[in-house]
Image (tube, rainbow, N blue to C red; front, side, top):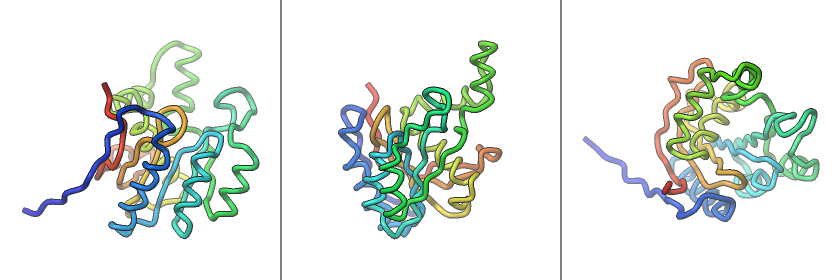
Length: 191
């Protein structure tokens, strides 16, 4: 039996102070494995712009919050950051969240949880970034921006910035249980 030794980085604290280091770790591993599909979460676009600068020439998918996530009809991604990401070759995906949508509406209206939010809470035992990384990989696959038969690196964070990077084999949302987390490259160490 062979083995693969991969260095994982565990940050003392979650948050945006880990963004550049997380992106660098992901880029190094993408180069080592020949992975061309990179998916990164962004809110205002700051992390998306940093990723677009670092991952030029890759299939970079920058996933935003859905419009209306914070308040009706409002998109948090700034127009300036949208333009910068696109000029650097990144593609932007804005859609309903894989672990949100109708289930969240049912929770808010009827005060009861649905399966997708229960799965989201289960993934959060590994940290918020792991949940988001899995979610954005499914969203990108559902949009046809990454393939499910190719490995990808998904980068997300806790609140703002990036502090989590995973190598995974994506799946479409309706095939969630086919998704495989292959490697944890970086994440905050939960206390």
